[in-house]
Length: 159
Image (cartoon, rainbow, N blue to C red; front, side, top):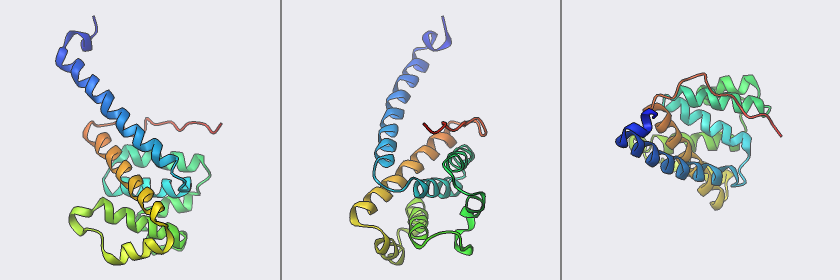
């Protein structure tokens, strides 16, 4: 008999966690299919993961972005994106939005950040952008809370 079967409370935890993980994965699927550029999604995921101190997700999203053709220069610049010329105005607006939504308890969403994002994103894209930020913040909280081992992630190979 394995440890999970021997301990009903542990088995219940795994059962509940599986349902919660599926719900989070459903949100991730929505985001991936939202029409936002995958390169933009990588930047959003990476910036939020840095802000949240999620080593597992930083490792994952740098590997995924690199596998999809992102440059080392841009990946290294994500934590200090304001000081570099490597990002488009649309990407800058998305990263600023990511920071504001991720740190909403400290800063709320400043009007100028919203105005700049709306200059580059339609209403539907704003919803999708916000859902992308919500999704990565959820993944960060799961990975950090449950101590996901950093460095273990291997990206999927392109089809």
